[in-house]
Length: 192
Image (cartoon, rainbow, N blue to C red; front, side):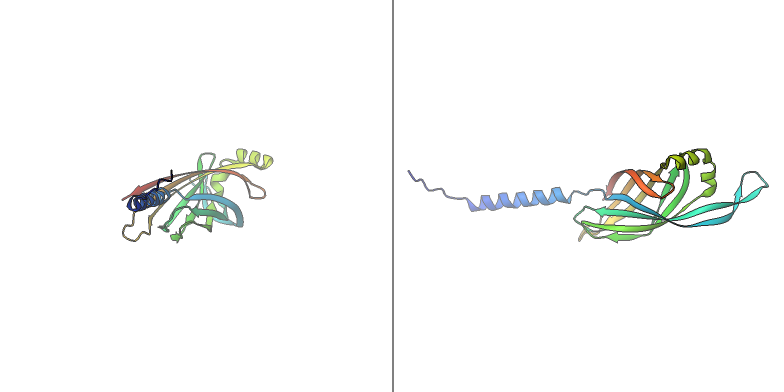
C-alpha cells in the first residue's frame, strides 16, 4: 500500500541547473534601450549672420537653442557604454537641427535622464513658414528624429559591440513646448 519513492538527486540537480541556465539565457538576451522625450526647454534665441536667399543678399537668421530632456532605460542585465553621437531633428521632411549626445555609460537595469543641448535652424524653419504658422495655430507640430548609438556591453570576458538605431515621431505644442505624443522605434544590432 505505501510504496516508498526514491528520489534521483543527480537528475533533480541537473534539471534545476538546466532551468536556471535557461532562465539566465532568456533574461540575458539583449534588448534595445528605450528612449522617451520628457520635455523641451527653450534656452535662447540666437541671432546669426550667414543666412542667404540669393547669391549676394545676406540677412540675419534666428536660431533656437533648446535642452531636450530624454528618459533612457537600459533593460539589460549588463551595463553598457556608448560613444558620442548626434540626434537629427526633422520638420516637414527637412533637417531642422540636431542635439549632441555625449559619450557615457549606463548601469544594468537602470533609468537615466539625459539633458541634450539642441540647436534648431531658423532659416530652415522659415522655409516652412506656412506650415509652421498652421501648426502654431492648431498648437500641434510634428517632428521626426533619428539617432544611431554605437557602444559596447561591459561583460567580464567578452565585450560585444552594439548599434542601436532609434526613429521617433514627436508631436509638440510649439507655443508651450509641451510633448503631446510620441512614438519611438528602436532596432538593435550586436556584432561579436
